[in-house]
Image (cartoon, rainbow, N blue to C red; front, side, top):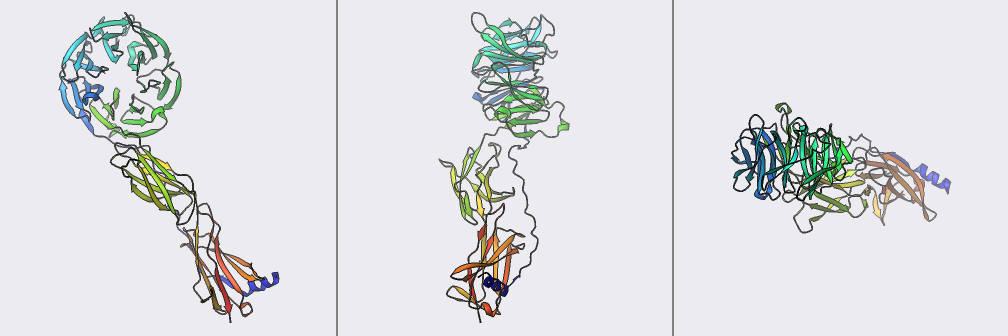
Length: 547
């Protein structure tokens, strides 16, 4: 039998009839950048020496302390509404816990604090509640916490340094011992711990103190923890569990229990603030950057125009959060209102993991969050990392926020979905599990005449078999296999590799001989697969040579 197959093979003259041409390389597209969204917000107000900000969400307004031109009131978009006249320059602001009053220190042009005033957030009426000095030392760094106004003074020498509080009810000024870890001459912030009226943080360039407050006939404040990390800015997470502070070009996360270090990232900041959802904002020079809670990932960065146009940039105590905006004082003369985007969830699910080329793939897309812009893009990413857009959809606003769509499987890899985001919603991305897609081999034989499912060819008539592989696999091998029916079963005669041309096509030509006339042959093509597509084979083509 082996010898018989040999002369059958010798009788078949085979040749490649389609030339091979090089294929241009596929375009490689880098993954979309979803994190760092650059946007320059408009300046919303011009300031005359901006110093501090408080946000009054209950009355849809923002108060900005100005050194030289009264207390500016804007709406939540930052547009000026009115200016409240003051007897001097305002320096520090603090909002009462019920939102009814804004407290401010008012000082003269020489720098001495004249008084602490209360501003009604509805009528804008101004009243003096306490003197602005303790033993001729100006009060600053007001913070409303636990119903009291906590402060420090700016005197440079002991025993003139004062740490204490003012009772807004009667204007009484109470002095307390200075926390040991703090140099009051260089204090930057006094911050209350949320939901803990008995916890207060005092930060300076000498260190940080965690102070426990005891209320009774008299109020006591005792340092219970300290850190030597010098800081010009400090903030507390909304749940009161962590403290964030800047120290020597790093931002640290500290435990609010004992001030132990939890983590840090290297970033310089002149001010920082934590939003209602835990998003952290850093101001440095002419940039504001936003990070996810825990400092795990930067979300975006805002560039504020030409850096050469600024002298100080974001000032200390120049960042303040509202419910859906971040307000910033820049260069003491500009107020910005940054749109704070909310977190978006986009999800992609593909149930099956193996497909034939061209098979419909059912994809579930979920978009949760955005209200107006609900456009998403679906990408196919093959195993080489080449990304191709396959669909663009608008997800309807429905109860389940879910859309089922169909795309076509062409290459092994995975599908991704991207949501670009806008001024109100974060960009988002998701990917489905890896899938495997087989190539598709298509073959044809057009010569000869059909008789009982077999093409009949004259022995001097060439048999042409053409093949194509989908998707394009130019320069790879398409195997043409020839079998003969002998002894009641199909036996392999030959396997011939033909390189695919730039259109992913190949062909062979077969010429017969009289001595093999009447034998039944079949030819079929096989593609062995690669990283992009798995193997596939074409259908059988049956033929005989006749005299």
